[in-house]
Amino acid sequence: MNKNNYRGRFAPSPTGDLHFGSLVAALISYIQAKTHDGIWLLRIEDIDETRTVAGADQAIIKTLANFGMHADEPVMYQTNPERQAAYQAALDHLTQSGLTYPCVCTRTKLAGSETYPGFCRDQIIDHSQPHSIRLATGNEDYEFDDFWQGHQLQNIAKQSGDFNIKRKDGLFCYMLAVVIDDASQGVTEVVRGIDIMDSTARQMHLIKLLNLPQPSYAHFPIITHNQLKLSKQNHAKAISHEDPYTLTHLALSLMGQEPPLLQQKTQSNLLNWAIENWQPEKLNNLAKINY
Ligand code: GLU
View (tube, rainbow, N blue to C red):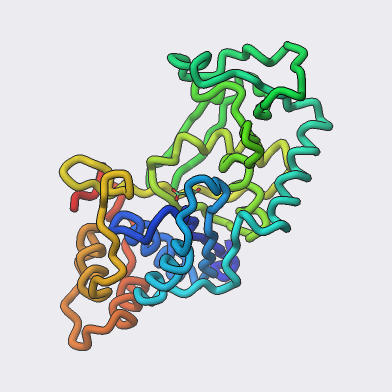
């Protein structure tokens, strides 16, 4: 691929400010884009409005800016009416192709089943009842060569079976939105944490059905602290008031990059050093990065 065609993205959900784990995710996607002379995009994944924290998007954008990371194009929001129309058009296309069906199953009914048992697949459903929309799937295998994780083979039937693309409460699902948004932003490489890797086959399947361009994938190891994933759920602390240089230096060290102690300790010098000296293969052997 021509170096300059690279387009990468960081896609945080606005459920709180960035914590150390999400800073590392942002840095990895940013450095990986810039080392290819590429474009780095930001998408606020606010599709699940029930989880959105007011003001978190602006806090994330401000923190990223403090750490020297500025999106190269306008920030995309999934709640934007234009995006919602794009999701609806994709859903209509899948429905016209006979690939969707309404599902009235409750959580209680599905408790204990890891994959969807297909209860509603061949039923006539009363559409006035609250229902989600599922994608009818078969026994599809998907293979991809992950930049960090190597060759992967995933099977949709084993992973999820027929999966939801629209929720009972009327919100579109992440799985549908993410592929449409990546295509719309022209993303060539999806860089994200390994904790989302098992959704890749479902996304590749939607990409195929919707005739979208297929990006490549790069799933990096997740950041753990005392064996726990650093996440808002684990009360990882917000980093907005931390010193960007010191924290970035620590993040780069944990990624095996061996950053030097620069004479001029500025964030832009450190980021430039990281871009020029990026050794992504150093992340390869880390099952997880410990913090
Ligand atoms: N919004 C997701 C998250 O914050 C990331 C999804 C993705 O990168 O595909 O975990």
